[in-house]
Length: 501
Image (cartoon, rainbow, N blue to C red; front, side, top):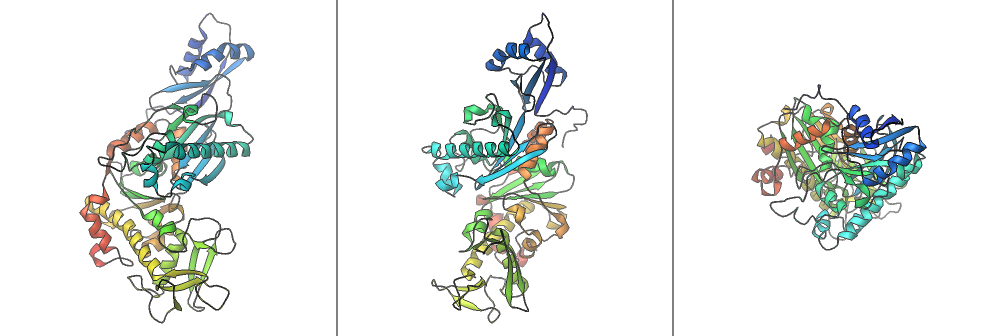
């Protein structure tokens, strides 16, 4: 059961306590300790340089601005003269890195930024990165740290601030990404018994990890629960509160991989699969990430016999992103242009043959009379898509089967993650990728991991909730689960076969 925290006082992770400077025979360190203890931050660690700065700061100023960071087990005094400290919150995905600049007490998001994870240039396959973390770590760690430093400069500049004002860097990401961020070898993660080197590394000195912020700034990583349940999932749960609810809910985090958590305040069950990369680059020959030029919405006009598409950025279409591909398949099936196996229905669309011999249709025609030069979708692409959506549905169904629940007993489905934010949930349910629930049950949660970090910044009582999540979470390995293959086989149809009913 979730613990009752109503009687436990709430504190911010980062706080500045203003203390008047008065002549006193007492040691200055004891004055600092007393002032911070009164505000709920007892006996913090005082780094040597901060201790050295105390006499000068007490002479130069009538008040000391004591900036303190509180972690799950330790508290650290960052500065005696930092009246307006800031927090940088970061969500490190395998593909993208997103950052917010946050006011530590009002929790206002002052600026935001995003960039491609530079490790993608090393390899888009996260397993490749993990396997090379033993012999090529600097090629993985250094670019990622540089990217986060760059985002911190960008968002601080946008707010008229300096990176030296940042006293806390708070990061969420999957377990592998967090190992690579710290330069910790991760080669044991994909090998049984899938043991991470750490779950919670505690409050670290940010500069020790290569970050250029305030000299005494701290780095806090949201703890992982295991090799396949990272701090990003923990942050997602903090954001949506699934672990506090009486009703059973599902959280789906779709990024480069897909993670699913099912449960409530009493229990949590998690599994992971690879639906994400298949949707944004591995399914269709014209598929790719959600960037300018991507078709993100698609409708079929039966009167015109043509598709109407919207394009990110408003320019000419260059490819389909995941949401556009889901809507395209949904429209093809809704208008009986493909059958349940993902094959084109004869006589319904103008079909041409690609050089590899596969049948295809042009969704966005080329200007000339010859088909094939526009954006097209082939039957081979459709077969790949059906396998991908089957993996997602089978993952959810397998977890439900293990706890003896029917889909109808699920109250809500939270859809998170870089790709998940854009999933058209009703269409995904229609084609058998998501559970067949009313659209009101689905809730897309944008920037869920960052929202979870911000909640933690404002309430350190959530450290105990994080510990509770870890205790309640059970991970199921889909690679060794016979139920997964049963459900996967049944789901390799649109929407799926009757075996799942």
